[in-house]
Image 1 (tube, one colour):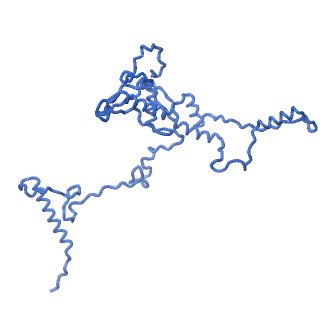
Image 2 (cartoon, helix red, strand yellow):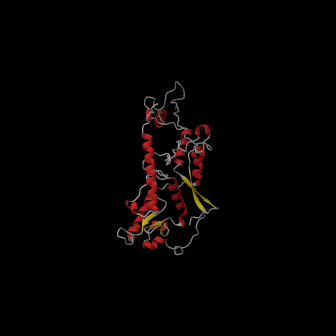
Image 3 (cartoon, one colour):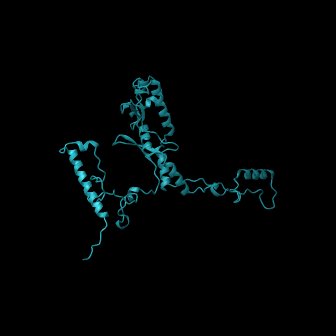
Length: 321
């Protein structure tokens, strides 16, 4: 319906009903935006926006991917609903219909509507400084003469016009009357407006249609002069940044247990873990692989115990003849 061109005027009878209209036996307007349910597992199915509304689907997908929101973020780019209820029976039609309506209402409340292309481009140009910002000039207070000369007498009409002019003009408050601190009014300057437009454009987008991919794409505003982290992932100086990870931490290699240099009585395997055997391993035949492994473990344990006792034994001084 919105594949880049305006749809041709067709009769209402030529447009087939939406899948959810037939499935849920309802003519609700929100149900016409969704496609047919697609099972994603044995217990859940997904209901996405129909291909006829590709602009809305592209907008929801882009906003959910970027995680942009004013209050709460979007839960997902499509609805995931269970197939059965808690009793293991098929989901009632009324509850399934209410689930779709609830997801539609929450999504439409949290979605950020796109701006027209010419308005978005104009605001983007003012943010970058390529286009001057039109600021409203403050109205100045002009003096109104009450007479024709210094010695002339003011007429009632001139006094009335002077009084009316003074009432309509804006009086500038003194410095003592102006609020100070955080409540001080900000000066409206082009630099201040560029910062304000930057904050606004991060929450606004425009939709563009690409003829090559035949799809709509949402373009969001990005802050000017941003530093991309991918530019600083590789070390720039081996003398300063060598041997650290992307976060600047020194990676710690896991300590490996040296089996041959171990003086512990109980041997360990190649991973440095203690070897354990079942209680019936001693009653197995000697040619059994588990029994052979147990005998080898006993031999290593005896050798380790002998080496440990020899290391702890004090050396006696030899007597001279």
